[in-house]
Length: 235
Image (cartoon, rainbow, N blue to C red; front, side, top):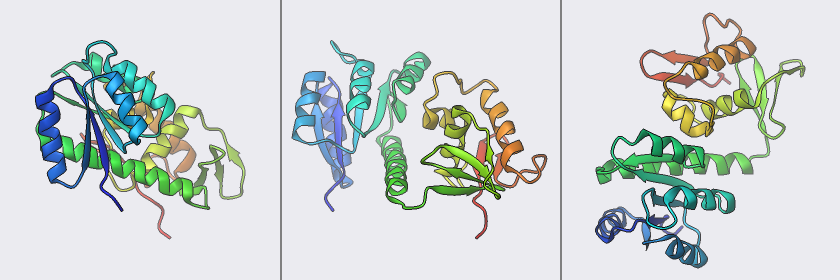
């Protein structure tokens, strides 16, 4: 297999060159673009696995370009935002970005986020190619194709679209602690905020549906001060 292709879209040539050298030294094939027009030209040459997209581009900004990418290509998108700019971060997630990082950033952190997004994309591809679409979750089964939840006897259990997305995000990352902020990123839900209680409320509802004993959950564990973790059923 060839090197993983990354497209860096940033109007700062120093940033583009630094990332090209750093990521290139770690085995990535790095392409560069200084604008939306240049990005489209690179996409014509070949669609990358991940796009690192500066939100503060002149002309077409990063949010516009992220929306363009999400509508046309199944690629990973990491937004590069200003330091501490929560509004830009949330806006990027709303238009479909997979993750974000704030300037100035440590290239090692960026590389870690790159690897995380790539793992998620690879897991998504593996699930698409899998012949089995049902996943055991507690005492129930989640059908990823029909987006339905059923008990062991095949009786369907009502589940909302938001609950499905949340449960799928958890089962896509088994035995991993996912913070509320990370769950917001993975579900790309515009109505949730990482600091309110909406995710907690939906976790409680899901436990009532899938756990043998919701008061003592075994499938969706709470990791105090960190988030939630999905524990697959023993086979």
